[in-house]
Image (cartoon, rainbow, N blue to C red; front, side):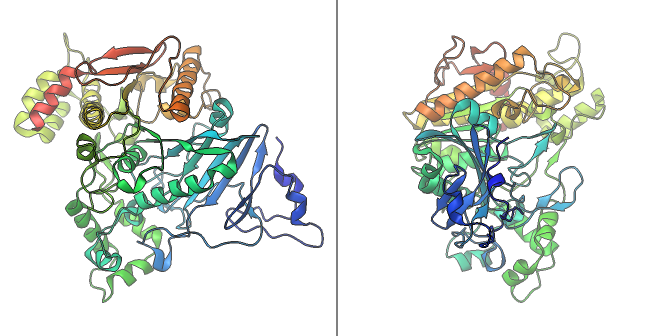
Length: 533
């Protein structure tokens, strides 16, 4: 691996710091030939060369949102004089570690990462927003021996410029209070969404310096990141910042202001600022980790149901109404859109269903607790046993919670978008399970497709990718790249991805082999919509 820092021994390689040069032994002129040196308006950055890919990590797109800037819209970073090291992952934004429940991260987290093929010029740009329910996550998440969102292989195979970005999470990203309204002059909140807008503007202004084409920016996100993408599709502030968007396993409803206000007030109480003379001064003095801890109390999921209130909020400023309604009325940013879900979303350990035994009685009591008087009809549709689609209660429970929160809402989003725009809309179902290991028993669980998006199948620890795995990996890269290049998918393996039609409900089944199908769980979704009206 050819590391550009081999040429620069006197650069401070600690994460996200200005690089100090020893003028007695080096000169900035010696770096002018390095392809990993980029001059931004605020200063120079030096990344690393990894074979045919140039990597830049921890590039600040905004100033640290600390002190007086906490709970405010992002602003540009201060210029730096020396060459800044861009070879280390940025610190995550403050949050609780999902494995141990301990606070991690730093408020100086508004950074992005760029991977660009050597010699790129006007290449398509693929921008990714990470998930985590707007409560957790970072660009440097690890799993199964790989950095999940590391973009080297995707950039190498697609020949596109790949960008991943971080944004404020939990309380720090979405708190809304009347005191903050008074300070801002408008409804407060949506700080994380504002960060994403700021980052997309940065990309428009600077991606040409990395060989990218600002007129061919494809945006995609997963889970909470998909809800952010849908918020960006809806907000007028994002007009022109991207040219196609893909939403994987995320919602388009938008958080309700009154709910976010109640959540925010509970956090003010929880950190001891409710009785303070100056509430905002108190909140800005509270340790960021404590704010993240208190905002996560009570958990973010419970037995398959998402609980978090963090995320794009209908504030009448960035989001005049819910993204779903804005799409339906054609008031959104009308670009080619893709809505996709996984077949077995809530089989992920994140949702708290697997890992325990569900008896028939426990399953029925669960359904009655959620649906009340309508529970018996739900139990008829999602019945268990001989002659039923589901052999054991946990299968029915995963199907019910997946349909309720992911698959059926995805149909509503595709319907609304297709009504509200002339640009094409597409739908997919990721229906491919890992070919071996115990994880294969979980099916196509929440987030599994990301390993295929980022081309990691050949590197997963303890896993040998099958030909079917590699086929799906290649298909996803090819189709997603088509959206970045031309805003429309080309055919793959002879299968043409057909635009959405509300009558036939066409969708691409992403498995091996690919197939176009119609009517994704139509009867079950019709039923769930009928009892929710």
